[in-house]
Image (cartoon, rainbow, N blue to C red; front, side, top):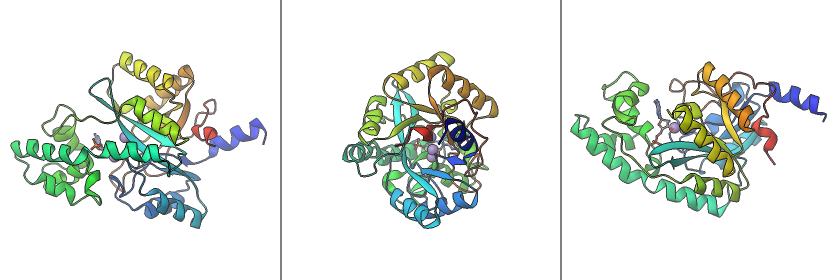
Amino acid sequence: MSDATRVERDAVLNADLHCHSTFSDGLLSPAEVVRRAHANGVDLLALTDHDELGGLAEARRTADEIGLRFVDGVEISVSWDEDVTVHVVALDIDPGNAALAAGLAQVRSGRDERAREMAAELAKVGIAGAYEGALRYVGNPALVSRAHFARYIAEQGHARDVKSVFDHWLAKGKPGYVAHEWATLEQALGWIQAAGGVAVLAHPGRFRLSGKELRRLLGEFKEQGGRAIEVLSGAHSAQQMAEFARLAREYGFAASRASDFHGPGESWLDLGRLPPMPPDLTPVWQLFA
Ligand code: AMP
Ligand code: MN
Ligand code: MN
Ligand code: MN
């Protein structure tokens, strides 16, 4: 294929390389996610559950059945610079890699205790039964996340939707926020490399970093083997998409297209509903093996 043909094809490819299923904090099963992506016109899909590979086999099976191109992925929780949580999406990984599996098991292991601490803090501000309530929303208790707490708290009528639950109770600095140690950036990038994957910095516009901190993060990410950033993200405003397109050019990162879909009615963007890739950026899927 000529370079010109590839550029043309990649500019129109409806890739969506970041979404969640019931194997983490999504609302749909892996098969339902894949079918919905296909119905929305997605040509290339990655499932990227938080710290978990369990949904990939079902997703791939379904994608094969309906003829949708699928890559294996995972979104790894990372603690950077002491107390900043950032997310790194791993794409085109070998889901059978032992180092990655062991690393992810370690990352998941602290979730239950953190959830109990969150519930104790929430009880102090009048939200009772949050641990048991959150568990009602999660398939595997080891994967309990703030998203499951948010659904319970909204269901109890404490806020009108999941987003305002975060604003009032679960975001950093709010009563139900409990600091947590995830993987280090170095560990996460090491596991991704071991599994033959491409490391992508997820939704960099979401991290609420100063310009200086953001640049330090981008520099360290690149230095340690990170190859792409999410430019087109469901978590980014149009202005942030333009800003991260500029930063991708400046740092020499490939760019990803990533809805971060969690479920109908609960996500900023539905599967595949992202703007086109700016034609001068290298799409991350050109780095896949
Ligand atoms: P955790 O990994 O337990 O800290 O939970 C993080 C998850 O909570 C993210 O992956 C999102 O699904 C969700 N989340 C975080 N911040 C917000 C927000 N402001 N609004 C809605 N969902 C959010
Ligand atoms: Mn999530
Ligand atoms: Mn994320
Ligand atoms: Mn995500």
